[in-house]
Image 1: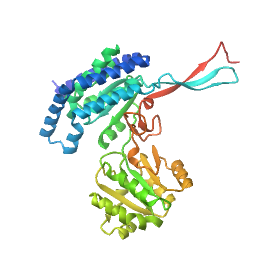
Image 2: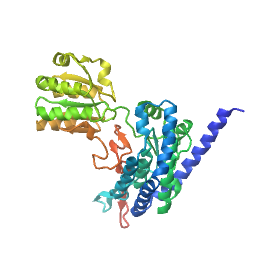
Image 3: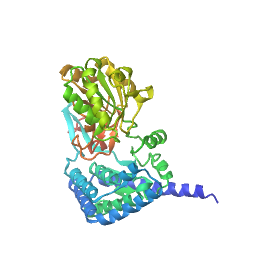
Image 4: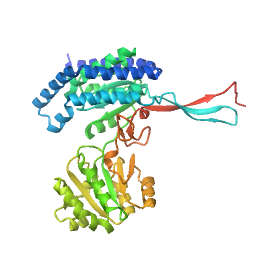
Length: 426
Protein backbone atom coordinates (compact mmCIF):
# COMPACT_ATOMS: atom_id res chain seq x y z
CA UNK A 1 0.00 0.00 0.00
CA UNK A 2 1.41 3.39 -1.01
CA UNK A 3 0.42 5.85 1.71
CA UNK A 4 1.72 8.87 -0.22
CA UNK A 5 -0.33 7.99 -3.29
CA UNK A 6 -3.44 7.42 -1.18
CA UNK A 7 -2.98 10.79 0.53
CA UNK A 8 -2.53 12.57 -2.79
CA UNK A 9 -5.68 10.96 -4.15
CA UNK A 10 -7.63 11.91 -1.05
CA UNK A 11 -6.52 15.54 -1.31
CA UNK A 12 -7.33 15.56 -5.01
CA UNK A 13 -10.82 14.26 -4.28
CA UNK A 14 -11.27 16.78 -1.46
CA UNK A 15 -10.15 19.74 -3.61
CA UNK A 16 -12.35 18.68 -6.52
CA UNK A 17 -15.31 18.77 -4.17
CA UNK A 18 -14.30 22.20 -2.94
CA UNK A 19 -14.06 23.48 -6.50
CA UNK A 20 -17.39 22.00 -7.58
CA UNK A 21 -19.19 23.50 -4.60
CA UNK A 22 -17.51 26.87 -5.14
CA UNK A 23 -18.64 26.94 -8.77
CA UNK A 24 -22.26 26.33 -7.75
CA UNK A 25 -22.06 28.93 -4.97
CA UNK A 26 -20.51 31.51 -7.30
CA UNK A 27 -23.67 31.64 -9.39
CA UNK A 28 -25.76 32.35 -6.29
CA UNK A 29 -23.40 35.00 -4.92
CA UNK A 30 -23.00 36.55 -8.37
CA UNK A 31 -26.69 37.38 -8.54
CA UNK A 32 -27.09 38.33 -4.87
CA UNK A 33 -28.36 41.83 -4.17
CA UNK A 34 -26.02 44.35 -2.61
CA UNK A 35 -28.00 44.45 0.63
CA UNK A 36 -27.61 40.69 1.04
CA UNK A 37 -23.85 40.76 0.54
CA UNK A 38 -23.49 43.72 2.88
CA UNK A 39 -25.62 41.99 5.50
CA UNK A 40 -23.24 39.03 5.39
CA UNK A 41 -20.19 41.26 5.79
CA UNK A 42 -21.68 43.12 8.73
CA UNK A 43 -22.67 39.85 10.37
CA UNK A 44 -19.12 38.51 9.97
CA UNK A 45 -17.77 41.69 11.56
CA UNK A 46 -20.13 41.26 14.51
CA UNK A 47 -19.13 37.59 14.84
CA UNK A 48 -15.43 38.45 14.91
CA UNK A 49 -15.92 40.89 17.78
CA UNK A 50 -18.31 38.58 19.64
CA UNK A 51 -15.83 35.67 19.52
CA UNK A 52 -12.64 37.63 20.20
CA UNK A 53 -11.56 35.38 23.07
CA UNK A 54 -11.90 32.09 21.13
CA UNK A 55 -10.05 33.74 18.22
CA UNK A 56 -7.20 34.75 20.51
CA UNK A 57 -7.12 31.25 22.02
CA UNK A 58 -6.86 29.67 18.56
CA UNK A 59 -4.14 32.13 17.66
CA UNK A 60 -2.17 31.22 20.78
CA UNK A 61 -2.10 27.61 19.59
CA UNK A 62 -0.52 28.76 16.33
CA UNK A 63 1.93 31.05 18.12
CA UNK A 64 3.01 28.29 20.50
CA UNK A 65 3.48 25.88 17.61
CA UNK A 66 5.42 28.55 15.71
CA UNK A 67 7.79 29.19 18.59
CA UNK A 68 8.35 25.46 18.99
CA UNK A 69 9.10 25.19 15.28
CA UNK A 70 11.57 28.07 15.53
CA UNK A 71 9.73 30.65 13.44
CA UNK A 72 11.54 33.97 13.18
CA UNK A 73 10.34 36.91 15.24
CA UNK A 74 9.10 38.73 12.14
CA UNK A 75 6.93 35.77 11.14
CA UNK A 76 5.55 35.45 14.64
CA UNK A 77 4.71 39.14 14.58
CA UNK A 78 2.73 38.73 11.34
CA UNK A 79 1.03 35.67 12.77
CA UNK A 80 -0.11 37.24 16.02
CA UNK A 81 -3.70 38.38 16.54
CA UNK A 82 -4.45 41.00 19.19
CA UNK A 83 -7.71 42.45 20.50
CA UNK A 84 -6.88 45.62 18.55
CA UNK A 85 -6.19 43.55 15.43
CA UNK A 86 -9.54 41.77 15.70
CA UNK A 87 -11.32 45.11 15.99
CA UNK A 88 -9.40 46.32 12.93
CA UNK A 89 -10.49 43.21 11.00
CA UNK A 90 -14.12 43.86 11.90
CA UNK A 91 -13.83 47.52 10.96
CA UNK A 92 -12.27 46.54 7.65
CA UNK A 93 -15.30 44.39 6.83
CA UNK A 94 -17.67 47.22 7.69
CA UNK A 95 -15.72 49.56 5.42
CA UNK A 96 -15.98 47.07 2.55
CA UNK A 97 -19.72 46.78 3.17
CA UNK A 98 -20.00 50.57 2.93
CA UNK A 99 -18.30 50.67 -0.47
CA UNK A 100 -20.24 51.05 -3.69
CA UNK A 101 -21.07 47.70 -5.24
CA UNK A 102 -19.54 47.62 -8.73
CA UNK A 103 -21.50 44.54 -9.86
CA UNK A 104 -24.12 45.34 -12.47
CA UNK A 105 -22.84 48.83 -13.23
CA UNK A 106 -23.27 49.71 -16.93
CA UNK A 107 -20.90 52.24 -18.46
CA UNK A 108 -20.12 53.68 -21.90
CA UNK A 109 -23.64 53.01 -23.19
CA UNK A 110 -23.79 54.53 -26.68
CA UNK A 111 -26.08 54.38 -29.69
CA UNK A 112 -24.65 52.84 -32.83
CA UNK A 113 -25.69 53.77 -36.38
CA UNK A 114 -27.77 50.59 -36.50
CA UNK A 115 -29.92 51.88 -33.63
CA UNK A 116 -28.68 49.44 -31.00
CA UNK A 117 -27.08 50.62 -27.76
CA UNK A 118 -23.75 49.08 -26.77
CA UNK A 119 -22.19 49.35 -23.33
CA UNK A 120 -20.25 47.43 -20.73
CA UNK A 121 -21.49 45.80 -17.55
CA UNK A 122 -19.27 45.03 -14.58
CA UNK A 123 -19.62 41.40 -13.44
CA UNK A 124 -17.90 39.05 -10.96
CA UNK A 125 -14.91 36.97 -11.99
CA UNK A 126 -16.53 33.82 -10.58
CA UNK A 127 -14.38 31.67 -8.28
CA UNK A 128 -11.21 33.14 -6.84
CA UNK A 129 -8.52 31.06 -5.16
CA UNK A 130 -6.31 32.95 -2.72
CA UNK A 131 -3.10 31.44 -1.35
CA UNK A 132 -1.34 33.30 1.43
CA UNK A 133 1.07 32.99 4.32
CA UNK A 134 1.21 33.96 7.98
CA UNK A 135 -1.28 36.80 8.40
CA UNK A 136 -4.65 35.47 9.64
CA UNK A 137 -6.37 38.80 8.92
CA UNK A 138 -6.02 38.02 5.20
CA UNK A 139 -8.69 35.35 5.68
CA UNK A 140 -11.28 37.95 6.64
CA UNK A 141 -10.09 40.62 4.19
CA UNK A 142 -9.93 38.28 1.20
CA UNK A 143 -13.31 36.69 1.94
CA UNK A 144 -14.93 40.11 2.29
CA UNK A 145 -13.48 41.51 -0.93
CA UNK A 146 -14.45 38.44 -2.95
CA UNK A 147 -17.95 38.42 -1.51
CA UNK A 148 -18.55 42.13 -2.11
CA UNK A 149 -17.51 41.65 -5.73
CA UNK A 150 -19.96 38.75 -6.12
CA UNK A 151 -17.37 35.97 -6.20
CA UNK A 152 -17.02 32.67 -4.40
CA UNK A 153 -13.67 32.28 -2.62
CA UNK A 154 -11.39 29.34 -1.90
CA UNK A 155 -8.85 30.40 0.72
CA UNK A 156 -5.69 28.50 1.54
CA UNK A 157 -3.71 30.08 4.37
CA UNK A 158 -0.31 29.06 5.67
CA UNK A 159 0.03 25.98 7.84
CA UNK A 160 1.46 28.15 10.62
CA UNK A 161 -1.95 29.92 10.96
CA UNK A 162 -4.23 26.89 10.60
CA UNK A 163 -6.07 27.25 13.93
CA UNK A 164 -6.48 31.02 13.54
CA UNK A 165 -7.78 30.72 9.99
CA UNK A 166 -10.29 28.04 10.94
CA UNK A 167 -11.58 30.20 13.80
CA UNK A 168 -12.02 33.16 11.45
CA UNK A 169 -13.66 30.86 8.90
CA UNK A 170 -16.26 29.92 11.52
CA UNK A 171 -17.14 33.61 11.87
CA UNK A 172 -17.44 33.92 8.10
CA UNK A 173 -19.79 30.96 8.00
CA UNK A 174 -21.97 32.59 10.66
CA UNK A 175 -22.20 35.74 8.59
CA UNK A 176 -23.10 33.87 5.41
CA UNK A 177 -25.84 31.98 7.27
CA UNK A 178 -27.33 35.19 8.69
CA UNK A 179 -27.61 36.63 5.17
CA UNK A 180 -28.94 33.42 3.65
CA UNK A 181 -25.94 32.91 1.39
CA UNK A 182 -24.47 29.44 0.78
CA UNK A 183 -21.74 28.25 3.10
CA UNK A 184 -19.69 27.25 0.05
CA UNK A 185 -19.40 30.91 -1.00
CA UNK A 186 -16.27 31.06 1.17
CA UNK A 187 -14.33 27.85 1.80
CA UNK A 188 -11.15 27.81 3.88
CA UNK A 189 -9.02 24.77 3.09
CA UNK A 190 -8.68 22.68 6.25
CA UNK A 191 -5.48 20.82 5.37
CA UNK A 192 -1.91 22.08 5.65
CA UNK A 193 -0.71 19.61 3.00
CA UNK A 194 1.03 21.49 0.17
CA UNK A 195 -0.60 19.13 -2.32
CA UNK A 196 -3.81 21.11 -1.80
CA UNK A 197 -2.11 24.17 -3.32
CA UNK A 198 -1.01 22.12 -6.31
CA UNK A 199 -4.57 20.96 -6.88
CA UNK A 200 -6.07 24.43 -6.43
CA UNK A 201 -3.85 26.13 -9.02
CA UNK A 202 -4.63 23.47 -11.62
CA UNK A 203 -8.44 23.39 -11.28
CA UNK A 204 -9.17 25.54 -14.34
CA UNK A 205 -12.64 24.07 -14.71
CA UNK A 206 -13.65 25.37 -11.27
CA UNK A 207 -11.36 28.32 -10.48
CA UNK A 208 -11.22 31.51 -12.56
CA UNK A 209 -8.32 33.39 -10.93
CA UNK A 210 -5.56 32.65 -8.42
CA UNK A 211 -4.17 35.40 -6.17
CA UNK A 212 -0.97 34.47 -4.29
CA UNK A 213 0.11 36.55 -1.30
CA UNK A 214 3.42 35.71 0.28
CA UNK A 215 7.12 35.40 -0.32
CA UNK A 216 8.80 35.39 -3.69
CA UNK A 217 9.33 31.62 -3.58
CA UNK A 218 5.60 30.95 -3.15
CA UNK A 219 4.62 33.33 -5.94
CA UNK A 220 7.25 32.00 -8.34
CA UNK A 221 6.08 28.44 -7.74
CA UNK A 222 2.43 29.33 -8.33
CA UNK A 223 3.20 31.39 -11.44
CA UNK A 224 5.25 28.52 -12.84
CA UNK A 225 2.81 25.70 -12.11
CA UNK A 226 -0.64 27.29 -12.33
CA UNK A 227 -3.08 26.44 -15.10
CA UNK A 228 -5.38 29.18 -13.84
CA UNK A 229 -4.71 32.91 -14.53
CA UNK A 230 -2.69 34.51 -11.71
CA UNK A 231 -2.86 38.07 -10.33
CA UNK A 232 0.52 38.71 -8.72
CA UNK A 233 3.67 40.67 -8.13
CA UNK A 234 7.05 39.06 -7.51
CA UNK A 235 9.21 41.95 -6.28
CA UNK A 236 8.81 45.45 -4.94
CA UNK A 237 11.99 47.11 -6.18
CA UNK A 238 10.69 50.64 -5.68
CA UNK A 239 12.58 53.83 -6.57
CA UNK A 240 12.51 57.48 -5.60
CA UNK A 241 14.22 59.84 -8.05
CA UNK A 242 15.23 63.27 -6.72
CA UNK A 243 15.31 65.62 -9.68
CA UNK A 244 17.66 68.60 -9.87
CA UNK A 245 14.57 70.81 -9.80
CA UNK A 246 13.30 69.32 -6.55
CA UNK A 247 12.58 71.21 -3.36
CA UNK A 248 15.41 69.91 -1.15
CA UNK A 249 13.41 69.77 2.09
CA UNK A 250 10.53 68.07 0.35
CA UNK A 251 12.89 65.59 -1.31
CA UNK A 252 14.54 64.65 1.98
CA UNK A 253 11.18 64.17 3.70
CA UNK A 254 9.78 61.96 0.93
CA UNK A 255 12.92 59.87 0.47
CA UNK A 256 13.39 59.33 4.21
CA UNK A 257 9.78 58.24 4.72
CA UNK A 258 9.81 55.98 1.67
CA UNK A 259 12.63 53.93 3.21
CA UNK A 260 12.18 54.12 6.97
CA UNK A 261 8.42 54.25 7.64
CA UNK A 262 8.40 50.43 7.36
CA UNK A 263 11.18 48.21 6.09
CA UNK A 264 9.47 44.93 5.32
CA UNK A 265 6.79 46.01 2.85
CA UNK A 266 6.67 45.70 -0.93
CA UNK A 267 6.11 49.46 -1.37
CA UNK A 268 9.21 50.48 0.58
CA UNK A 269 11.88 52.28 -1.47
CA UNK A 270 14.88 50.05 -2.15
CA UNK A 271 16.89 52.31 -4.49
CA UNK A 272 17.33 56.08 -4.28
CA UNK A 273 18.27 57.91 -7.49
CA UNK A 274 19.61 61.46 -7.23
CA UNK A 275 20.35 63.92 -10.03
CA UNK A 276 24.04 64.79 -10.11
CA UNK A 277 23.41 68.54 -10.03
CA UNK A 278 21.59 68.35 -6.69
CA UNK A 279 23.38 65.39 -5.07
CA UNK A 280 25.80 67.60 -3.12
CA UNK A 281 22.89 69.46 -1.52
CA UNK A 282 20.82 66.38 -0.70
CA UNK A 283 22.96 63.35 0.02
CA UNK A 284 25.18 64.45 2.94
CA UNK A 285 22.24 65.48 5.12
CA UNK A 286 19.95 62.67 3.93
CA UNK A 287 22.69 60.09 4.33
CA UNK A 288 23.25 61.22 7.91
CA UNK A 289 19.53 60.77 8.64
CA UNK A 290 19.57 57.25 7.22
CA UNK A 291 22.65 56.33 9.23
CA UNK A 292 21.07 57.67 12.42
CA UNK A 293 18.10 55.39 11.69
CA UNK A 294 20.44 52.41 11.31
CA UNK A 295 20.06 52.08 7.54
CA UNK A 296 23.01 50.48 5.76
CA UNK A 297 23.89 52.42 2.61
CA UNK A 298 25.31 50.93 -0.58
CA UNK A 299 26.23 53.33 -3.34
CA UNK A 300 27.83 54.08 -6.68
CA UNK A 301 31.25 55.82 -6.82
CA UNK A 302 29.70 59.32 -6.94
CA UNK A 303 27.57 58.49 -3.91
CA UNK A 304 30.61 57.21 -2.02
CA UNK A 305 32.49 60.43 -2.78
CA UNK A 306 29.74 62.33 -0.94
CA UNK A 307 29.13 59.64 1.71
CA UNK A 308 32.50 57.98 2.39
CA UNK A 309 31.07 55.44 4.87
CA UNK A 310 28.77 54.01 2.20
CA UNK A 311 29.50 50.44 1.07
CA UNK A 312 30.13 49.65 -2.60
CA UNK A 313 26.93 48.85 -4.50
CA UNK A 314 27.19 45.82 -6.79
CA UNK A 315 25.09 45.06 -9.85
CA UNK A 316 22.95 42.77 -7.66
CA UNK A 317 22.09 45.68 -5.37
CA UNK A 318 20.22 47.48 -8.13
CA UNK A 319 17.94 44.45 -8.49
CA UNK A 320 17.54 43.85 -4.76
CA UNK A 321 14.33 43.93 -2.75
CA UNK A 322 15.94 44.12 0.67
CA UNK A 323 12.83 44.28 2.88
CA UNK A 324 15.34 45.45 5.49
CA UNK A 325 17.16 48.63 6.63
CA UNK A 326 19.44 48.59 3.57
CA UNK A 327 19.33 51.17 0.78
CA UNK A 328 21.06 51.35 -2.61
CA UNK A 329 21.87 54.87 -3.84
CA UNK A 330 22.92 55.94 -7.34
CA UNK A 331 23.75 59.40 -8.61
CA UNK A 332 22.45 59.82 -12.17
CA UNK A 333 23.05 62.48 -14.79
CA UNK A 334 19.39 63.45 -15.26
CA UNK A 335 15.81 62.20 -15.40
CA UNK A 336 16.39 60.23 -18.58
CA UNK A 337 19.15 58.24 -16.92
CA UNK A 338 16.94 57.74 -13.87
CA UNK A 339 14.11 56.38 -16.02
CA UNK A 340 16.55 54.12 -17.88
CA UNK A 341 17.71 52.75 -14.52
CA UNK A 342 14.11 52.11 -13.42
CA UNK A 343 13.30 50.39 -16.71
CA UNK A 344 16.37 48.16 -16.40
CA UNK A 345 16.27 47.21 -12.73
CA UNK A 346 12.76 47.98 -11.50
CA UNK A 347 9.95 45.53 -10.87
CA UNK A 348 7.07 47.69 -12.18
CA UNK A 349 5.67 48.09 -8.67
CA UNK A 350 5.97 51.73 -7.50
CA UNK A 351 8.29 54.54 -8.52
CA UNK A 352 8.31 58.22 -7.57
CA UNK A 353 9.85 61.50 -8.67
CA UNK A 354 10.44 64.54 -6.49
CA UNK A 355 10.46 67.68 -8.63
CA UNK A 356 8.95 71.14 -8.91
CA UNK A 357 9.08 70.98 -12.72
CA UNK A 358 5.55 70.27 -14.01
CA UNK A 359 6.70 69.12 -17.45
CA UNK A 360 9.18 66.63 -15.99
CA UNK A 361 6.58 65.33 -13.59
CA UNK A 362 4.19 64.74 -16.47
CA UNK A 363 6.89 62.95 -18.48
CA UNK A 364 7.77 60.73 -15.53
CA UNK A 365 4.11 59.81 -15.01
CA UNK A 366 3.70 58.97 -18.68
CA UNK A 367 6.95 57.14 -19.37
CA UNK A 368 7.65 55.11 -16.22
CA UNK A 369 5.87 51.80 -16.78
CA UNK A 370 4.95 50.77 -13.24
CA UNK A 371 1.66 49.89 -11.57
CA UNK A 372 1.91 53.04 -9.41
CA UNK A 373 3.83 56.18 -10.42
CA UNK A 374 4.02 59.14 -8.03
CA UNK A 375 5.03 62.78 -7.94
CA UNK A 376 6.28 64.34 -4.69
CA UNK A 377 4.89 61.51 -2.56
CA UNK A 378 6.32 58.53 -0.68
CA UNK A 379 6.12 55.11 -2.31
CA UNK A 380 4.58 53.89 0.95
CA UNK A 381 1.25 55.28 -0.29
CA UNK A 382 0.95 52.40 -2.79
CA UNK A 383 -1.74 50.64 -0.80
CA UNK A 384 -5.42 49.85 -1.28
CA UNK A 385 -6.45 51.67 1.87
CA UNK A 386 -4.49 54.79 0.96
CA UNK A 387 -5.97 54.73 -2.55
CA UNK A 388 -9.52 54.64 -1.19
CA UNK A 389 -10.08 51.01 -2.18
CA UNK A 390 -10.47 49.77 1.37
CA UNK A 391 -8.74 46.48 2.00
CA UNK A 392 -6.85 44.95 -0.90
CA UNK A 393 -6.46 41.34 -1.89
CA UNK A 394 -2.97 42.09 -3.17
CA UNK A 395 -0.96 44.23 -5.57
CA UNK A 396 -0.55 43.34 -9.22
CA UNK A 397 2.38 44.34 -11.39
CA UNK A 398 0.91 42.47 -14.35
CA UNK A 399 -0.68 44.43 -17.18
CA UNK A 400 -3.65 42.13 -17.72
CA UNK A 401 -6.53 42.12 -15.83
CA UNK A 402 -5.85 44.23 -12.74
CA UNK A 403 -2.86 46.46 -12.04
CA UNK A 404 -1.73 48.03 -8.78
CA UNK A 405 -3.65 47.48 -5.52
CA UNK A 406 -6.51 45.05 -6.19
CA UNK A 407 -9.69 46.00 -4.35
CA UNK A 408 -13.34 45.15 -4.97
CA UNK A 409 -13.45 46.47 -8.54
CA UNK A 410 -10.25 44.60 -9.38
CA UNK A 411 -12.09 41.37 -8.56
CA UNK A 412 -14.64 41.99 -11.28
CA UNK A 413 -14.47 42.08 -15.05
CA UNK A 414 -16.63 43.57 -17.79
CA UNK A 415 -18.83 42.15 -20.51
CA UNK A 416 -20.45 43.89 -23.44
CA UNK A 417 -24.21 44.42 -23.28
CA UNK A 418 -26.40 45.31 -26.25
CA UNK A 419 -29.86 46.89 -26.01
CA UNK A 420 -32.22 46.75 -28.98
CA UNK A 421 -35.90 46.82 -29.83
CA UNK A 422 -36.26 44.11 -32.40
CA UNK A 423 -33.17 45.27 -34.28
CA UNK A 424 -31.69 42.95 -36.88
CA UNK A 425 -28.44 43.24 -38.79
CA UNK A 426 -28.91 44.14 -42.46
